[in-house]
Image (cartoon, rainbow, N blue to C red; front, side):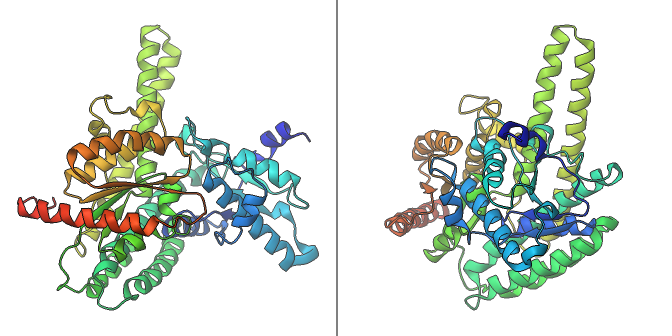
Length: 449
């Protein structure tokens, strides 16, 4: 089988039944809870240990690839090699499905699974491990992965799991800078994540979302005990950028902890925001295509595009409904920063004069998100991305001069697996500027809202 045939035959939407699904870790919370959602529906899903195989990932790539591509490749190679060593002759590569999504547009993410496929085919014993791939082009439809009667419910359970993951992350970021004892917040986060994985696995497939919410609410109520009320509010830092690097703590060298160590409190852009954006973007694309079909009097295409628009509109409405439910219950106990609504982010782009969602990628989200952070009284913005990332470079080109005029501190944080000797000096200087911004803002009576 040549490489082009392999890309068709061994990358796609394969049934997850009777397979072990290998899930790459991106955000610890989101990957763990999505895997728990799969297990709730009877799928054997495992989150692979991450960053242990980075040298393998670099060994089989040229260095021109996006850094997350090297990390995720290393993760799957490391996992399969460990399984092969552990199981010996009983190891069967066909028993595994490697779960790797993709996205269209001007971003190398759409090519990860293709390169991974070529490399797996070149490896001794791994060529029969197929890659289960979802794409943003159809809003990550799971048609073909499981039985039709389960698809919609699994998709919605997984979305709720992602929102809960975002809440757990924000619980950690909100409590850790103010904890009474060092390490207390991290330990409580680990315990809570384990409990929520169990809750999602037990209740997810049975549609018992209220029980899941109740367990989450109880955990958040106890989290308040971690906070020392005598510690005054710290400069609030908004983090944007490429979704993998900003979420994967090992690849960004635990940047949030570093910012906290120099006196900050951080809010990172959420995973759910990306899912919402995909539904919103596909809805807008369908609308533009419908208008074009109407002008051309192509009634058949018009009907199809209107159906696509309605489908994505319903999906986005459901996502916002669930997201609002979870945040409403969470905010009874902790003053967590709520998620952005995608239409508000698009409006921040000033009717296309700063940037346009039609370009695609996360650049529009990052620019709009940074401006929303500023509007809500944040004291600094950090843009996190892989070295040479094109969308984040576009984001930087827009945000740097814009935030300079707004007098909001801003830094870029690019990563490629090496350690920058001046990173701490950059962060320390940035946090001093953020602290000065906070003083000035408070002196003007501009509190967060």
